[in-house]
Each structure stands twice: as C-alpha cells, then as structure tokens.
Length: 190
Image (cartoon, rainbow, N blue to C red; front, side, top):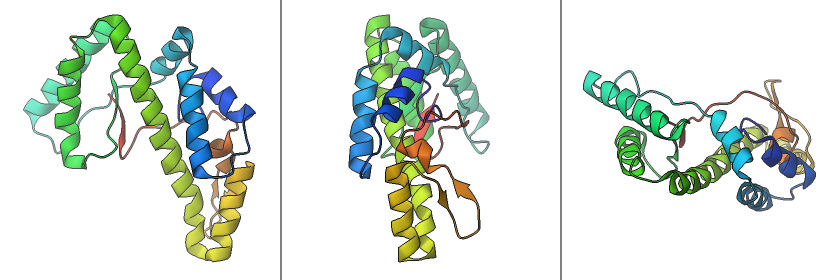
C-alpha cells in the first residue's frame, strides 16, 4: 500500500477496512483514508515522493526549466512537487507539470499543503486503479481467471497470471505492504 501513498496511517486505514467488494469501494476507501491524514501523515506521504525528470526526448531547455522549477518548489515547500496527470496525454505532461509548479509557487504553505494533499489523494487513486487493472490482467487468460482475479483482489488474495508471475492483489485490497513503486503513466511525483 505504501507504493500507492507513503503514509503509514493511510495504508493502515486501507488494510483495516478490507475486504473491498469492488473497485468503487476500494477507491472510496482510499479517498476517505486520504481525507483523514494529519499534518504529520501528509508530511510522511510527501517525503516518500520524489521529483522525476522529463523524458530523455525533451529538449535540453525543457529539462533545464523543469530541474530549476523543481528546485524552486522544493526550496519553498520542503518536499517534492506532486501532481496527478490523469486525463492528460503523455505529450502534455511536461507543460502541465511546469505550469503547475509555476502556479503553485505563489501559494502560501498552508494552501499548498491542501493542494498537495488533494494531488496525493488523486495519485493514490490512480496508482490503485493501475494496480487493480494489472491484477485483473490475469483475466486475459479467460473469463474464469478474470473472475477469480477479481474475487482475489476483493478478498485480499494474490492473483497469479497465466505466465506464473504473482501480482500482489493484497496490496490493492489493503494489506500494508512496502513494495516500492513509482508514479508512471497518468500519475506523477514531480
């Protein structure tokens, strides 16, 4: 769970409320746990995030601008810039991140803490959704495997794909695992 949100309290709340009967209840549980984070819990979650750079294909000027923007943000607020990129196309990520940093640098610390908390909530939802989708990818082996995968995810079990690799669905269902994770696809830390 800590790969989805770096707050131990969030992970414990998610584990305490399982099993989740469907994806909607899982995501609602994630939101509820996110809204209950204290200042210290939020600081812990933000400390677990890291700034990532632009794609290697980005122009040198864009890479320099992003590094400078991250440095200014981290100097101002003491943690990595977090933003959910759900709903954006990959080619829009860099512009959206730069615009987000520029806009949020003008925030006072309390306002930025609130914005960062909301972005962490959105990141956790996106990460859970992607983990759930990867766990249910076992369904590609056939309808029975997909149904078994969904049942295992809801109950906190482990889904095994046709190739034999295990997907830790108990992470999705709420076990407080410590698997390492990164924001990829539509989620972004920094």
